[in-house]
Each structure stands twice: as structure tokens, then as C-alpha cells.
Image (cartoon, rainbow, N blue to C red; front, side):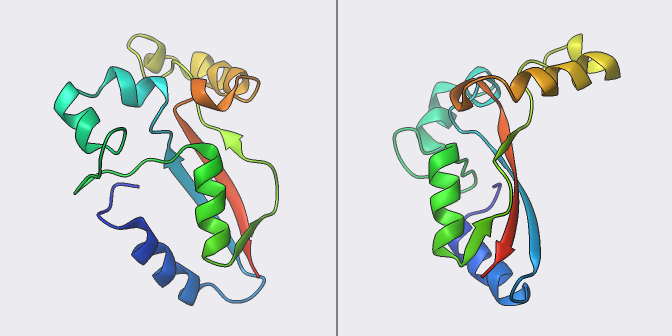
Length: 123
């Protein structure tokens, strides 16, 4: 999430979503290739790898699911991975490569992907 305090934001969202309502969510994998390749050392320090951030908060997949459960949501399907290398030029110029990249990402371990998509139900 590109917000200061994800828990406060999720608490607000939880209040808005009715019981059994659906919430679709995506998040950057703070340990994924995109985050690590595009982050300068000072940003890595601020991003939560070694400390807290004032503007960026990414999640690992396990932490993301736990955070959602704490806010009263349950997964309706497995966590889906976003992509692996389609953020890199020239891969990002080809729709076909991006589609295959997303299919590949779903077969990779969570630490190798750039983000996560979740389908959640309010309980």
C-alpha cells in the first residue's frame, strides 16, 4: 500500500464493506524483484525492510493474509501473484509477454513475484 498507516485504512474499509461483502485487494511484495531493484538503499531502509516508512508499506504474502484476517476478512480463493519481469523494459511493451509473465508468476514462489491479488469476504 502506498499509504502511511495500512491498518487504519483497512479498518475504514472494513467498516464500509458489509458482512459477506467482497473486497478485492492488491499489494506490492516488499521483498519482490521490483521493490528490490527499484529501491535505493535509503528507500530500502524506509520501506520497512529494516525500519518503518512514512509513505510506503509493502507486505509479504503471509503478513498480508494475517493483516486482512485481523480486520475481519477471509480469503475466498488462494492468493494470486501479480508478475515477475514484465515491469522491465522492453518486456513491459508487449501485452503477450505480460500475459505469459503473469501466468509464470503464479507458478513461482511468493518471494519471486512483485505483488499479490486477493479476493476477500467480510465475515
